[in-house]
Length: 463
Image 1 (tube, rainbow, N blue to C red):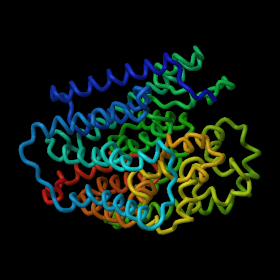
Image 2 (spheres, one colour):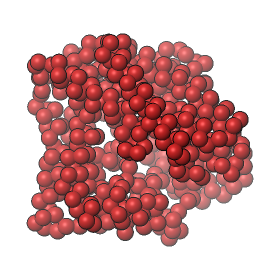
Image 3 (cartoon, rainbow, N blue to C red):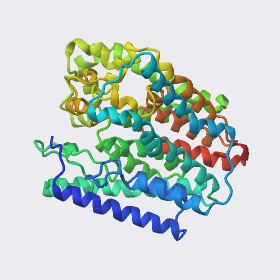
Image 4 (cartoon, rainbow, N blue to C red):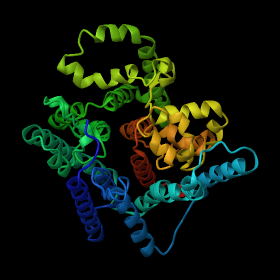
């Protein structure tokens, strides 16, 4: 696999990112687009970024910051409930606790000359770049009269249509020209292209999303809305596109979608839908984990089948690819295969210091976990240099790691209080929360929750 961007790719990515950002900002100023749609469109274009600054500085981040400054410059009165004061400031509690523990009890973090300075500013950086913009965006959506369930659904449908077309275009261009620079210009990253294979499966399409699994995730989030609108041709087309991402995330989220929407309406509460679906999914993972030997034995007979390769190869490889064959049992978490270079080192660290499950390590402090836990991973040396923090895609796990389980439980109960009179709305919100267990879709949970507040006219929940 080719891993690095060329100079052409770097500059084209930067220019396209700027153009997308400027376009969305102009549409916001001219009131041609509502705030929630602007956030969703920008989230869907994160394949492009000014890479010389960093891949996480993209249109999504820029649009978030613009909306915050643009809104608060024009807002004369700010109403904020106690509930969301707590949400905004509880991460500070986690950070202060970790400072206190490290200074006065025991310092278990790793520093070098560079990362020692970062230790004091990293929580603020994480808070202002990741956490605060997320919930400030929610407040802005609450105040935007044009942000509605109807506009949300329309935007989702439009992005699915565009993403499917872009994905097939990427597949066509990559197969015809086989030019890595050209692929980068159209949003296809090199690390998702196998240059040693010329078949259709050599490319994992991603449209303009950050990576293929984000496209697969987005299509799953769109599936209930597509079926609700009775757009069956688009549904089939989008499923084919999702399969071409070759992402195991798609298989998992599609199972969740199926489970939640066949559950009886009598369950009623959003929390029961969430917990029931996750219980079923985790049980399925446990069954697969306990049946690995049987599955692998029969998988060998079909592994060269294109359909099996498209749907199951990457999922099966999560159970079979190990850095160390001795550590096989440690590469699963409640039966689920986890990323060996991201979540696994953190779980090992938490096993050594189990109280962290309650307190968390503090916002952004995963950067300072000792590199020894990452030995064998692709960015071990970057960890030694203090240059990188693991990206945790399982967002329930992410919030527990950073803030602790107590704070996460407060988040969960605060953001699942409200329910709609509409069964589809409740199931869809539960679906988003269940997907959040596996994917980085925080903004969709916040947007939908705020739209639910507006539908119920529950001003006491205002951010």
